[in-house]
Image 1: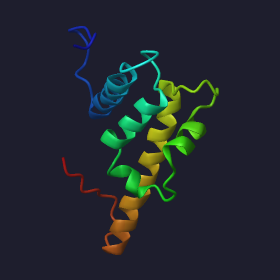
Image 2 (image 1 turned 60 degrees about the vertical axis):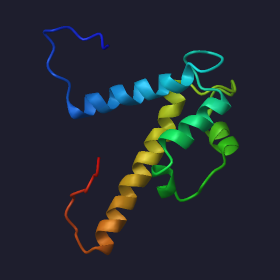
Image 3 (image 1 turned 90 degrees about the horizontal axis):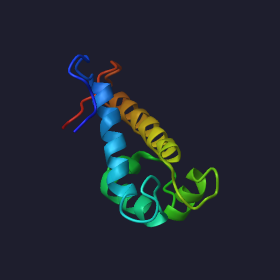
Length: 117
């Protein structure tokens, strides 16, 4: 499936996570229009299916229209991979902050996250 050669080191956890982000983007970008960008409906579907839990941690719950307008830096009514990464970054940061708030409420100031897979 991946284009890695046999001589390469096994991929790290972070590298695997990056591969998954790319794969998920393409699962949605290939549905309609340009195969390498998201239309508004593809973005909406990706958010609903892939970010439903973590978007709860984002303080201001923006509408799809607002998110689309915010991410579409070049104003072409399409979301490129780079533009979609802005959303991933924001949601990841908000989730990280949320995990710390939960830890603080539990009076555990250690930097240990309980991730459940």
